[in-house]
Each structure stands twice: as structure tokens, then as C-alpha cells.
Length: 278
Length: 291
Image 1 (spheres, rainbow over the protein chains, first blue to last red):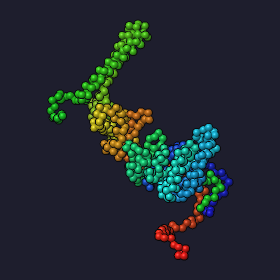
Image 2 (tube, rainbow over the protein chains, first blue to last red):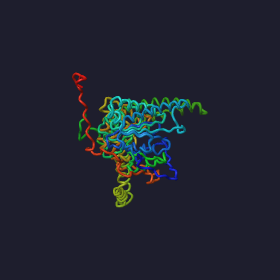
Image 3 (cartoon, rainbow over the protein chains, first blue to last red):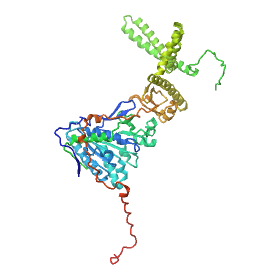
Image 4 (cartoon, helix red, strand yellow):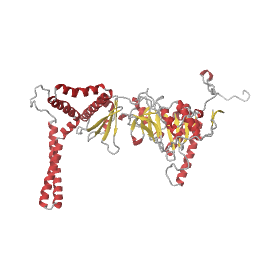
């Protein structure tokens, strides 16, 4: 059922000209410098307690991907509302439906095989901006909902296995996984999946061990302990990314109105004659 | 164990900069350095000048002399290294002392006392009155204090650790950061980054700071590390994204709903309780007639 239709217009919507091959704006660091994350050929794991700012960080990266002219979007959100605002500009939006999530990951697995076949045919090891297909950002909010909460053990294991395959093999072919969860311990997602994420972002954690689970062992001993972050300052977290060092960052704030505006614009530029679903 | 004495037996005008055992060690090192560096430099210098100068004998003598001069300079540096290190650690205080005491004394002897007082008092009053300059002076003060505290912490750590023969790290510069201060240091044999890891809590107490973070300052040099002293949180303010500014706002493209979406079960009383699972039937299966 359609409840809203975009107006017919004679003008051609022009995007802001961003590219997923360029670094995405995340926020600012302690020195006041802007923090940009190069998402291409990377995977990012975001952890932290509820309200620590995981979804804010996720929204910034999804916003960059949505406004990029060369990036597809697959959004998987057990809560619906965090990524749901971007649903209209996404290629696939998965709500609290584990079966749909598994089927989507299976589609992406097939896509992975096809793209590797293509790369082998053109004698290359990873994609470039000149290739005839676009990278895809796969944003997952609350992995635990699909891997440890709903469904039976078999389907949870299947979801984790498909996601692990995607993280392990998708990097070179432009399938970027950005996943958020509250505590990525082994009872929530398999250790073999967690350790595949090269880049980490830890918001406030309730214990030192939780901080180390997100960032990796040993960071808390060096003083990068997300337990010591201020829980009343959401969006702040330790980022382990370029150069392998950790730094304190704060994600930029996007209000609901900002997101609706950006998401509508992104949907408009991607599909000017889109009829929005209910 | 030495006892404190109000009237020490040594010369009262004598100040111990370097303990006697350490001085003996450095003297031995200096002798070794003199002979090793001096002899090798003398041989190299003699051979080089003998072949390059028009008079080989003169060149050989000059090269030998130059080599031993180099060895002597190196030996002197090694001999006074503990003093040089102390001067480096107390450089800020020494400079301050020279400016305030020596400069002040010279000024008092040059101009009237009131003028000298104004020369020193007015800048101090201005710095104290302006918040920005006051903050700057405080950050410089904390940078100086941090270097001393880090050195004393490392010294205690070396004394308490099994590697008692370890050498104190070279505390490099400290500079203010928005969250506090950052101190760089060069680790030397006996103390590693792993020794400092896990002691960030104790370090924070040593610095009187909220938190201390340490890490490698260089990817290629393991000995080059930094210590971040966190005294305040500079990330309290909201960080705004520039992305909304990249697109021209057009309210007409933002879809609006004509009314409440037709979704039920939004209140708990509208959501029925799930039926309990049917009890498993045990015993014999009912016969066809009973069924």
C-alpha cells in the first residue's frame, strides 16, 4: 500500500557527489580533527551498551553510503527504527525477520561467488571504481537479535555462518559489512566471526572485559578502556582503525529530521520516480 | 643503610649530583669509550690523512691526534652523561631560574627597584588575569610536572622489577593536548612497553589525572612510546555532521504520512497472551472407537 508519493518534477535530482571509495565522515577526535573512515575493503564492528551511540555511528556511515552515487545499500535491523529511516534508499531492508535476513545473506553469498568469477575472468584480485557494478554496504544493527535471540539454534547458526562468509570473502569484491551489537561475546556471535572484523569501535561498556571483547585483547591494559568512558556522553568511543592504533572519537550527531532529509534526498537521487511504500 | 644526619660528615658545601657507585660506573665506561673510540678513530684518521695529505707523516700524526680528540670528547660525554640527563630533566626549571633569579638580580642592579618590579610584575599580572594565558601557563606547568612524575614512576618501576640493571628511559618532550598532556619517551634496555601496560591506573594516580593511555609512537621503533595524560573530556560538545549541508533542503521531497499508520497492537492490552503449548499426551493411544 502506498501512503506517500514523491512529487513529479521536471528537474533532475543531483546527488552531493560522494563516493564509497572516499573516506566517510564519522565525527571528531580528541584534538578536534575530523575523523574519516575509509570503508572500502574494510569491515567494522561497533560495540557498546544500549545508548552508547552505536546507532549514531552506524547512521553516519550509512548516510555516506546512501549519498554516494556508487554504492548499494543492504540494511538489516532487528529494531527497525535505527536503520528503518534509510529503508527507502536501500536495495534491501530487513526488519525483525530472521528468515528474510538469511535469504538476503544467501543472495549476497551468491553475489560474492559471481563477483569472484568476474574478477578471475578479468585477472584481478579486487574491484575498482571502473568495474561495471557497485560496492554494497551491508549495515547490521543488533546482530544478536538474529544470531542469538530469535529462531532456533539451527537458523541462528546459519545466519552466523552466512555472515562470517560475507565478512571473510566480501571485502575484495566491495561488500562492506558494518555491524553493531551490544556485547560481541562468544555466546552472541562466534569468535571466528568477531575476529574477522579488522576495525573496531567501542562505545561505553559496562566492564573492562566487554571493552576488550570489542576492541581486542590488551587495549584496556594500555588505557583504552571503554568502561572509563562517560556513559552520559553518548557517541564517544575508542576507534581502532588506520595504523592499528586506538583513538578516542565522537560520532557526529544526526537528528531524526537530518536523517529523514538525507534519506529522502538519497532515495530521490537514486529513484526519482519512487513510490514510497507504507 | 644510611642515616639522616643534620650535620653530615662530608663537606657541607658539597652537593651530590651523581651517586658514587654510578659515578664509578660511568668513569669506567668513559675510559673504555676513550680507548675504543680514540684508537679506532686514530687509525682511520691516520690512514685517511696519510693518503690524502702531501706529507704522509704529518697526515698520520694529525689523524692520530684528531682520532684521540674524538675519543676524548666521546669519553667526556659518557662521563658526564648523568649530569647531562639531570640538566635535561630540569631544563625548564633551570631556564626559569636563570630568567627570574639571575635576570631579576641583573635588572635590580641596572634600573630602579620599582621599575624592575614593574618589569616582572606587570607580565605576571597580565598572564594571571587573562584566562587564555593562564590556561597556557598551567598547561606548560603540567607538562613539566608530568615529565618529572613519569621519570620517578619509571625509576620506581625499575627498582621494583626483576630487571634491576635496567636503564631509565629518556623522557622526551611533553606538550599540551585538548584532553591533557602527551609525553613522549624513549625506552631503554630493562623497561618495555609491556611493563607499563597494566599500570595505567597507577600512572593515572601518579599524574593526578583521570586516565592515562600509552602506546607506540612509531610503527618502526618499538622504543619510541607516548603517554597520554587525560585530565578532561574535550568531547563533551555535540559534533555536527556536514552531510545535511551537502544537499539542498527541499521539504517537498520528504514524504509525509497523511495520518496514523494502520498498525494495531501498540498497547499491551491490545496484544493477546500467547496460548500455552498443548500438553503432551502420554499413556496408550486411544482406540478408534474411543476416538
